[in-house]
Length: 465
View 1 (cartoon, helix red, strand yellow):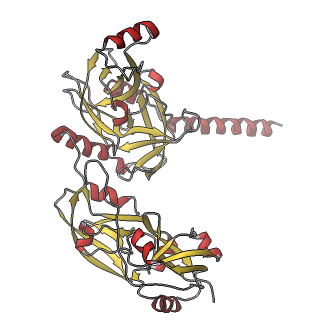
View 2 (tube, rainbow, N blue to C red):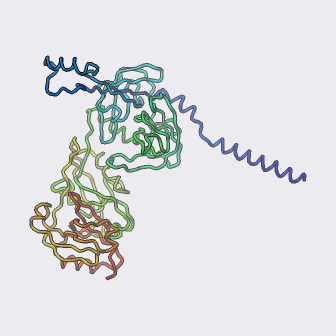
View 3 (cartoon, helix red, strand yellow):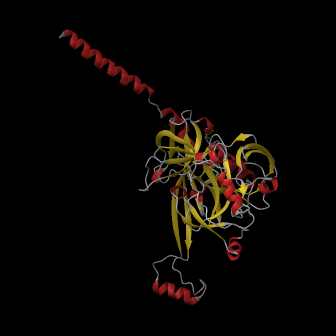
């Protein structure tokens, strides 16, 4: 009995020691919050909605306008205010503040409140909607400022802390871990987001994301939610990306980006195999803008860009960011994969238009095609002259019917237009069939497919016929 009691108490003691050891490993955020909290600010904005009563047939100075307004809508003001809240953080002692562009978008009045309750009117130095970064300035000196960290050193699973004003509650602190890095979000090709499970809510936008050293590694920018509140899917703009933007905003008031004039897509394992690559790394070129920088340098559709300016392109999301960060006019070495082997090309970077409305990339192919391609599991027909002119291409095969399961799985649809196979422009139906004959059964074939006004590659595994 005594032995049993001794064993029981030893077990309890062991568990207690284990819990104690585990508790010691949990992070303590108090020192970080105490030191860095004063660098975080509350931002409130006011937008003015004018002429809300809407007597559009009479100008405001017209006596009939005043009479109608007095008689029928005396309770409605000529102007209405719309207010919103956000967060920001001080990046210099003389009053420069970083936040999100959407926090201050269309604001006519911006008020910045510090943790010591002082309030300042702020002006927008510049805002960049592409990255959702804005730079503000208040007239103050001797302010506490953040220390910039290196987001590239962040590790998935590492603790991070957010400070901001969710729902207007100033200086709220939440913590979590890094869930993923270099996360691509739709229509945000210039930002490799840091994904966290830190609780972020409306009002947190523009606030800092700290690492455990008290350094800012990101700007809390957005959440993915169905309820409107935090669901553990939060995204922050890496601070190095934001700093590059604010430096340009501070000096010129705008952001200048590079471009090379290509459309790209992710390189899947099937596509990589069809192009003879050992692994799906790089950015696959699906379209090249005619007379654009890439076209002039000799880059072609079906090329896979492996390195840009000596830096590896691990996935398609890397390339737009690398190109955009390159100064227009620079000549950059590009390593690409073409027809089974590497190749070096130099491209001169052009400037991206400010409005972001770029010309849609187009690449013309040659000669007529007709017939049915059975090995791909699709029925095709030759396009008429009128159809070719309407599509502004010189040749193409119209997909009439998708018969094979592999073609359906690849996403081919009735109405798609086939432009090329791999890196080889299709000269004739005979040539096309000859190419297919040389492909072993069960292998993947990359088809350049046009749908609507866009073209991209799809990989289809050939049947055994």
